[in-house]
Image 1 (cartoon, rainbow, N blue to C red):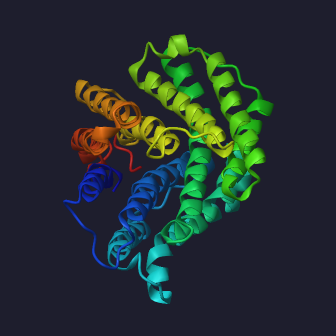
Image 2: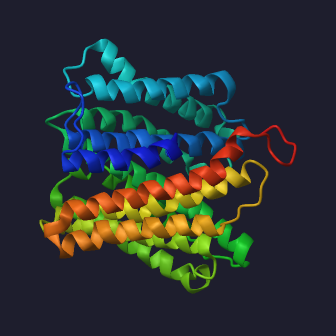
Image 3: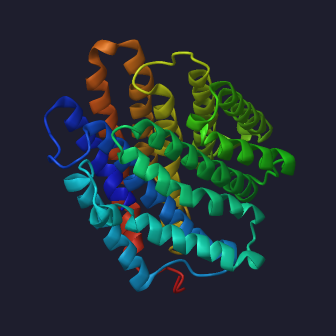
Length: 369
């Protein structure tokens, strides 16, 4: 689903923005549909897939599979159709249920698993997910609300920031140790402080502007400070790890821009701060992690082939067009959006065609899962 939606959704948005395509009468407005589907279509496919897979390593319980996983995918597909035909109309109980069934089903499973097997959880800070995951349902419904759309989008991005902070904290030191024989310095007060700040800052729209700006700015400074101690000069010797560092830096820049916005400073055009997060952080890191996961969790050695590097390079070009060219040449804004969308889609098509088939085959090492 992540590969399919990553390839499809940006192209549809570019066609909507150009006026070439229109949504059905019952759908949300184009911008609300775009935000909802990128966050709760593509974004949830990635986040839920990651968490359902990671739970096996965290608490020693196999993630959702077989019939229950098929139900989750079915609900997810029904939700995509429901958003298109009724996501923008007044919602009765049936439509409300169809729009929330996937999230409620998967989030309940994940929270139950983390709470039930808390005693053997190898990561004591998984309480962050127990707290943050249910709030996604609030963010989702606010995003579809015509009058509170901005609140929902801001909250959803804030919650995704939390997930990325946790993921970076867990994977980068491991990758540096395994691939580069480098032990990165860890300070528990700093790690917990960053997670706490980012979690509270997810609710920035409900906080006084000065407080929200302070939390966001401090989180950005601490993230950047920690990054500088994590040996970036060594990390960039590896393509895959270097991409992670770029995404990490993108998260810090995004938080700094969000802090400026809350302080009343105008930051670019076209939701620049938001798209620093979506393109540099999500756009580069998610394909990189999918390459690793699709190979590593099917018994293959995680390798970045030439086509993978090309695909991530296309995403980088898309990021430059979306974040830089649109600011320097407003006259051709929609053109840059269209090309950036095509770059994003091409990245997921190329990577999906290479590693996607691995997910349909037995593991190469003979293990069941």
